[in-house]
Length: 353
Image (cartoon, rainbow, N blue to C red):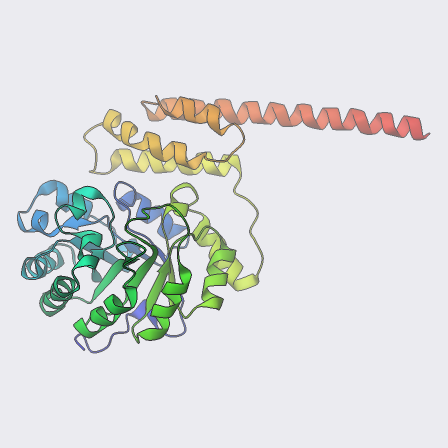
């Protein structure tokens, strides 16, 4: 195989890396950096079009920005022309020097599928094989792939696809355990992921329905996956990487993240987004951050009230005010609860006396 060995340094036999899954509109350079600080071992950019790279589109190029601490990092490409994909891999490697190139064979979004990219290639294995082979031949750095288990429940062909990718020189495969037809509904099929991990010699990284350290430990124990990729769970709980590592090391759960810590993270994320080159001004940055802020409050006490405010937040100063107000109200509520509990305990003692 090319590059001397299929083994990427972070996938040595004694390691079990946690990947942050590439997610369009989510895993920009700011969020990747934050997740890396919280324990993610490997990060991947949002998917970018091979044609956008070749046309030197400035917006596409911004999606591939990263800082050195985010390494090991891969740039994810999508497309259906193997030679053009190979040219794009050479170009992006000259620009950015990523640690690897990742091919998107999993995206279920209609606009990507309509261009014969992403998961649409799961319906055309000869073309998928050609894309992988051409990219591996052309790329100056190792090539990995991310895929789904098949197009739909009648066409679950992950095993065949994995073998083809291994033969093409792909050095690791991340498998999301759903079909394209499922989107993000239903449950991820870890039986198929496990079967693929046993069938090929290259590392398989499992992805789908991973939301806790216990989930990571279970899939590591029950399958032969060589790593875990976490996507949607990290959107609202980027601490999941730290929690997972702690659980793998100790078998114990960490204490829940406090509301103060959550707001501190939200403010830091927002401030970093504001000074990144992704947005032209504070208004555009805040508009983009609204959904992110709402995600951070999902399932929390008072979350509905906060989300109503985040829908309209337009500045960092306003977000700071919302945080201060909510924390003060929470503190007052806690004091009242403590006082009521104290009064109740005193009454019980008097009755007992």
